Image (cartoon, rainbow, N blue to C red; front, side, top):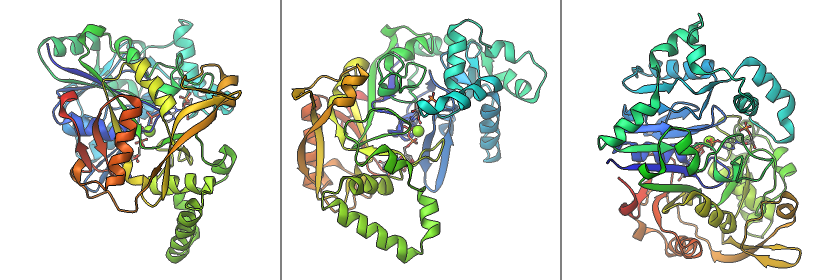
Length: 430
Ligand code: GDP
Ligand code: IMO
Ligand code: MG
């Protein structure tokens, strides 16, 4: 049997799944998406080229076989424009490198309107995701197999790519191929396990990979979770380690708006001021610094992302419900310039310290973070090529995370590009 590795987001999404999938896809034969739709935005940076994928798996650049599984929801216009975007950049897209499950569901214009009219309470992406899954469960959805019978541009374009993908993926695994399964969203956005109702409408956790592709759990070799060295969230909902308030973040302009408003010197001055204030323990400035240094503005909607310290209570929960054998830490470079870093080891709820992640929303809203403090570093990490060459304080920060989570780090990312990836432990990979 081949090797099948599931990669999932361990937090509230945007952990850098696209970048890690692209890195690992070099050694894979097949890359498959199993849930979500174009609420996802996965960024891949290779040299000076930047690709933003919403539906197409991030293995497409390597010209591997990419599968969009039955558990996904498809906006045909978005998929076709993504295919055409790649074709304009010189890629040939056909059924040798992209196939789409005939059982995936189609997002309709009515579902998008419904999401836009009702999604504000949750802060959805407005892409029709929730209404589409709702109609799927109510057994009145439209599937890809029905859509491609229609006589329109999108149906014609997608028709040759539509297959019964369960067969393709199982045959690949059975014939010894290496299969990489690409999660979208993150564990804390899971409809069953996330911070309900502030969640998405699918199962982005590892269990969803089996149902969303039609493969059995005995065929999974390994599950790896991606975590940022801190944590972010877009949209509403409780966020225990948040720095500053949701309102403060929401009222900010995007980075490009800020940069276009200020001169180069003006921006540099503001940036220095934010670093200074962050190091005076001003929480909002700490969060804003992470936002600016991490480019934390949504790939799909451009919204400023809420930022906070690494939440080990949530991470342990995510490791448990996903059954993760190792973790990837991304964006370690973003923590530079902070004199002190915090890791949340416990929550305090009604005066009691707990390591349990509460599923009850009222309880979670009351949770206060209990932190340990670690020394930060000023060095730029983006050119480092080996774990042992990291500043000692950065190594200690990672070792502390491993110790608290009792889980090994397999890969570390210190920048957005493919070559800014450090393999720490090969044992969990292809
Ligand atoms: P995904 O949804 O999990 O694929 O993540 P996104 O692409 O939405 O967001 C992650 C962002 O961080 C993207 O802009 C990536 O290019 C960028 N990124 C990924 N890894 C790193 C890293 O280690 N350092 C920095 N600075 N940026 C990274
Ligand atoms: P990737 O794959 C971050 C969030 C939305 C909102 C909630 C519900 O790029 O990590 P939805 O439109 O799914 O009904 O919105 O889920 N959300 C994401 N946040 N990254 C994502 O995907 C997300 N997909 C959905 O912001 O809070
Ligand atoms: Mg994203």
